[in-house]
Length: 329
Ligand code: ADP
Ligand code: MG
Image (tube, rainbow, N blue to C red; front, side, top):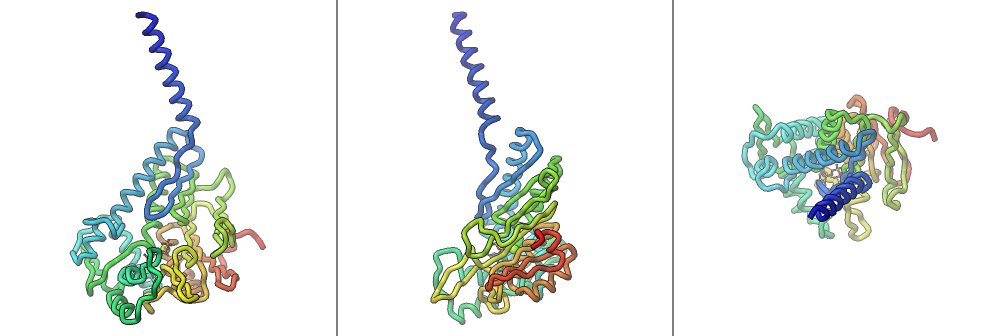
């Protein structure tokens, strides 16, 4: 009897030791799938236990905000607004909608979260491979216009049959909130990557973080530039990831609200460096629609925002302050 006890205790001790070792040695799961993309959080300089706990908190926050800001979650604020209700929206939805309006005004309507009817019509990224007809494009375009977003006393409503999609700014906003969470927990060094929206905390062991800018239409990992940043966010909008081809023409997912069609200019992509990721995200979409000249002019009006425009002919154009983040040629 006594022997059996000893054996059981030994077995339990072995199991505990094995579990302990496994928890120390196993890979830390620092990626997840959310917001239709792969997200990762790379935390440096914290214990394994704290890192694990923080990763869990980060991914939970991400899912919670995604539920609040996605247009495809039945019954959330965005869905109710899109159904025509007047909604006393949550703090987060209000913050994102207010910032969206600010960038709509600043960009002369190039950035406009009411483009949803056009996004649905073109349906780029889904099975769609046909180009909508002019009448359908005009009908969808008639439903757009950020002037239809009405905010008052914490309530939001959409006039003129408008419907919104926060896809061009929500990832940035959520990245900022993940950064705030990590900093509030004592983290001094980390990189958050929300499907290419990069948010950095501090630096990487005394050196700036190196963020690669993908060369459009080249093999994954082939870089057009490397940006060295500390505490900044780096966000890219481009036409090389979500698109379809039809009769030699490329149709991508960023709409020009003025034409009702995918933005057509000299750009393949634009990358923005900025303190806050929500700003970088909105600006990358706006600059992609505006093109390099008007885009650079827009960036001049936003303190601390810099842009790197990658042209279809392979050239790059950078705003003056971008040099601080780039290696000397
Ligand atoms: P990504 O989604 O690839 O990160 P963006 O931040 O540029 O790229 O956002 C593009 C998304 O935003 C589109 O998929 C669409 O849902 C929405 N959108 C498209 N055109 C516009 C626009 N002109 N203004 C605001 N949102 C847009
Ligand atoms: Mg964007």
